[in-house]
Structures are given as structure tokens and as C-alpha cells.
Image (cartoon, rainbow, N blue to C red; front, side, top):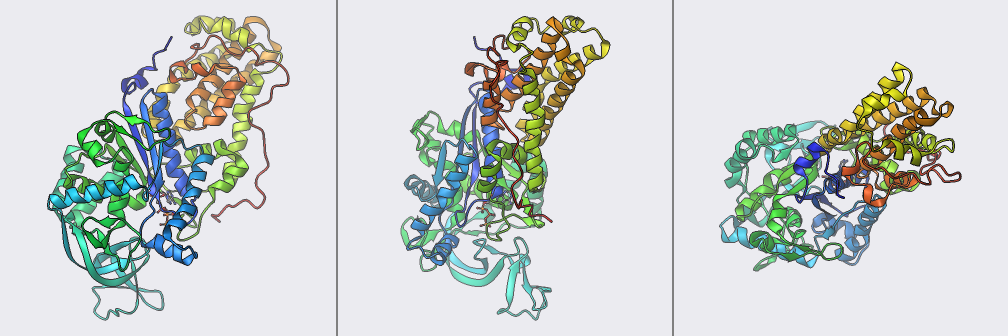
Length: 582
Ligand SMILES: Nc1ncnc2c1ncn2[C@@H]1O[C@H](COP(=O)(O)OP(=O)(O)OP(=O)(O)O)[C@@H](O)[C@H]1O
């Protein structure tokens, strides 16, 4: 029989749709820890919503067009950019596989259906008068692939000092950088198509302030964008490049001399990945290029349930450009833009271009997928920047072994009988007050009742944190309860007890293992499964509705047999650990 979900979880579950997207990454070099972080947050969130019984999609992929790719491909001696991206995108797929990122589609912007989506979006914006042809001059960053206004450009003098453009003795041949990313910019003039971004200033402000203040999460990031909108006037945006300069891109419809500029192309991946523009407009079923080619019944409903998770480096493109493109095309907006902080290295953003990176494939190969997932999700906070410390990763792994593994091992000792304990107490477990009379001393009664209370509150508290993508606080709850359970076993010394008293200690402790393992499935999908296997929890009793005390009355049949291995063992740190922060 299907059990009900815990109360607060129930309120938003059942048949609801949840689509989360990672940014599509630029395959101009191998992925690093920062990319894994975005993908992991999406994956853990998608799996959590799945556990809440919602229908879920996770889309990710690579952004494969543009000058940076064209240049990197030439530099690396490839005959064509296509050959280059065909090679490099595989590293991103490999990372997803190693990190168990359970995506439904890995979209590449070189996919055929994507080109159609982008051109459809262009045509709709053009037909509605939001695209026009003009002359573009300004400060252009090759690295960032965008122009910067004069106010964000400074000249770098030979002694390293900076000169603002408003100063009169400016030397156009000198070196200039933009103050946002500090990448070099050059003065440049060319014919482009423009998007009328300036027409959206008021609509965006009203969207964020009045109509949908939840559109950007967390609120601190929304406030930053609102401030930017108040401070700076939006200028029309160049959205194409002459083919003479960029060969590697999607054609502008009806103008073979121009290619579509990367952001207009890249952002559209989110629409392609749920069936394309027409599907979203008509809301009719569409076959998807997802794993196993599924059919999506209501693409527009999915679109309304879509959250884009991104790093703060690309917030302007997602919170200003993207809603404007969609409004111009007369399309509905996605549900939310979620913005996270950065992993730093040497005090600056870990980045492919800078090269100050941690290779996630290396660390997963050594420490295993689940400890790395746990470490990243525990040592980050969506509103803050994080530092990678390999010694902390190793310590996290040790903690999984010594705290969780230890609790499990204790319950599985051959002096105990989990199966008997579960049979005796599961049915009656709601009467904890009454059951506490099995213990003689008051302190044991109190710690037993405390554990029961913590377990009862766990699913709802965990849920609240997961819905805010606050994985750090969610995981803290697990450590707290595992710590209490270990202390409970230590203090009650069940190996010196017998009968019901022993069984109640073991039942309570093993329930902590079972329930925490069910709840942590979205965080550590493989290890949680191994823990549940170790105590013989049936595969169809691992849903959130089973994550309460006593809701599985038949497990542990073989758990106390000798010779069964532990799911996670100690390993030494990596030789020459890469603590890249001094
Ligand atoms: N240091 C980081 N911390 C957290 N997320 C990151 C980090 N670097 C990249 N990302 C994720 O990847 C997205 C950007 O992808 P991109 O491929 O442009 O990465 P990048 O390393 O910044 O590349 P490049 O150096 O080539 O600009 C970010 O919005 C974020 O989702």
C-alpha cells in the first residue's frame, strides 16, 4: 500500500512538474569543480523533488558556438570547431556520469533541433519589431564575448595603475580592460543586428518588484539586479556578428552574412530542451530528444515549472537578457532563476580561462562519487563563495565512515538481531512514551525520546532546506541525528543488555540509519542505496513516505549475519593533495 508523504512535504508533491536546468557550459577546456557544483545542486534538487513524487526533468549541456570556441579550436590544431567540440563535450558528459548527474537531456547547441529553436525565436522577435540592423561600435571583450559601456572600461598603464575613460589623456592603443571581469577589451566597429533591450527596462523592474518578486532567488541577488536596473539604463544589445569575424554559429534567418551572437543562441537551449518554441506556444505533446525519447504532454506547463540554476557570473544574461527575449517573442517566462556563488581559488573565481582549477574527475576517482557530492553540498552555500580544501574532503569521507558507518556496524553486530527488533517495535513505535518504560534510568529514557522527536521532525525540516537549496543546513540535520544516535548506543551499551531493552536500542539506532539513508538518496545516491541494502530494506520501501519511525516493519533479515561487508571503508588522502588555497 502506498504511504502518505510527511505532512509539509505532501503540500507540494504529487503530479507537480519540476524542471531544473544547469547552465550550458563552454567546452573550451575541461570542466572543473565549479561546473560540478552547478550540476550537483541541480541533480540533488531534481532527485529531492522526485522523492516528493513530482515529475522531474533535468537538462544540461554545452554551449558550443562563438569566437572563443573558434579560436580555441584553431589554437589546438583542430581542422574544424565541430571536431574540437565533439572532443571536448565528452569531458562534460564523462563528469556527469562519474558524478551521477541524472540528466534527462544533455543538449549541445550544435544539435539540429536547437538551431531551429533559435531561428524561431529570432523570427518572432523580428516580426514583432524587436530586432533591427545597425552599426555597432564599442569596447569589446573577446574573452567575455560582449561589449562593455565606457563606464566599465579602464586603461591599464605600464606601472599597472588604472585610468578611467573620462580622463582626457587617453591613449587608444594602450591596454584596456573592463572592470566587471577584468578581461581585456578592444575598440571595435561593425554592422550588427540589435535587440531592443532598452524597451524592457520598466517591464523588467515591474516584473522583479511587483509582479513576481520570487522570479530571482535568493532575494539578495534579486535586489542586486533591481539596483542595477535603477542605476544603469539598458542599451540595445548587439545579437549578431559578421561572418567575416565569426564563422562558427547559427545563421541569422534571411541574412547569410551574419551569425547569431552566442547569448541569443545559448539561452534558447532551455526552450529547445523541452521541445522548442512551437511546442511551448501550442502546449501540445512533443517527442523529446531525452534519454529514451519520451513524450512531453504539456510543454508549456513544464516551461512554467522551469528553474534555471546559474552561477552569479552569468546573472545579467539570465535575469535581464533572457526574460526580455522571451517577452519580445510573446512567450511566457520560466518559473525562477536561481543564482549561486562561486568556488574560489587563490581568492578569485575558479575558471577555465584562468586555469586555477580543481579537476573533479581526479578527486572523484580517488575519493569516490558520493563523498565528493556530500563534501561539495555540505561546504557550500548558495549565497556565498566557497573554498576547496582537499583535507576537508578527506575528513568528510572519514566522517561518513566513522560516524554513519560506525552506527551501521554497531547495529549489524552479531550479538544483535535487527529483524527481531524491527518486528517487535515497528508497529508500536508511535507509542514512544510507553516504550520508553523499557529503559530503567531517566537519562536513557530522555535520550530515546529526544531521538524519536528528531527522527519525526527530520523529513519536514530536511524538505524545507532542500526547497531553498540550502544543502549545508540539510546535511547538518543528518549529522546531528547520527551523532545523537551514536551517543545513545554508546551510553546505553546494548551489548551488555538483553531482551526488549537491547532490542529497543537497536531498533531506534537502525531506524536512524534507515531513515537518514532514505532521506539522503538525492545527496549520495549510491552510498545511501548501499546502506539500505546492508540492512535489507526492500527496494520498494525507500520512498519519502517510508522515512518515518516504524513505517517499515520488515527489514534486516540477514543484517546480523557474519561476513557481510561495510558499504564504505577508510582510504588514505591523495598523495600531494591539491589544497590550492594557501
Ligand atoms: N568557480 C565557479 N564556481 C561555481 N560555479 C562555476 C564556477 N565556474 C563556472 N561555474 C559554473 O559554470 C557556469 C559558467 O560556465 P563556463 O563554462 O563559462 O565556466 P568558466 O570556468 O567560468 O569558463 P571560462 O573561464 O571559460 O569563462 C557558471 O555560471 C556556473 O554555473
